[in-house]
Image (tube, rainbow, N blue to C red; front, side, top):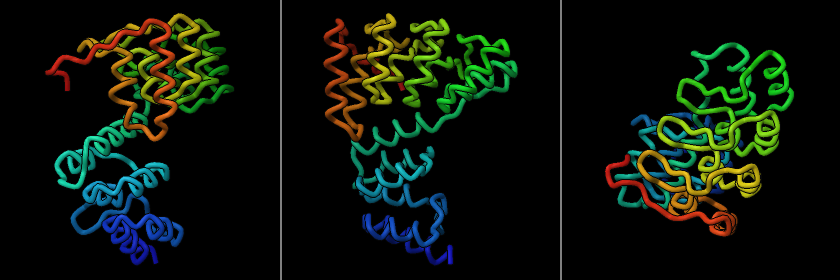
Length: 245
């Protein structure tokens, strides 16, 4: 049954038929199934530039791979909108790399990612550092902001997390919140003293992410309001250096 449903899913994704894609999944098609040339339904839809199907599959949890991004960048039917949408989705799908951390710090990072408040409380009680970063130099506050976990952000700030803690590449929680498109978290971080003019080591400003990156997100109205929030607090625009990849 699943093989037949998978084939219907591939055909529907190729045709950009959203209703048929939804029906195939309801009939048991596997979201991460691959066709004869090793492409998932998401990659197939990307190849055809079918934005509504791409959005739907992402909402269902379809994983963005490097192959998907490559197809998006090369297909004549794709466009910058699709490429940026997939890149944003890929960022949100990364999980904490906690192998170098203590058990308590690892628990904190995972709980921040999941928005698990009891888990955060247990981790702190077990001795976790609220400033803990994982093997990718991503702090717990950044994970919570990236995932749109407002209550986890609030908890970490109340526990003393440094609102401006940056990775070795200069990324801050405010940048993550902007890319996540979360007005609530952007406001929380700004109220806590987040630097609206922080820049990555490639000189990309917070306002750059708001204007040039989340422009491709689904909720354009929210993106516009985030830009207004930042500008009202003095944010200045600066694009990254040309060699930033």
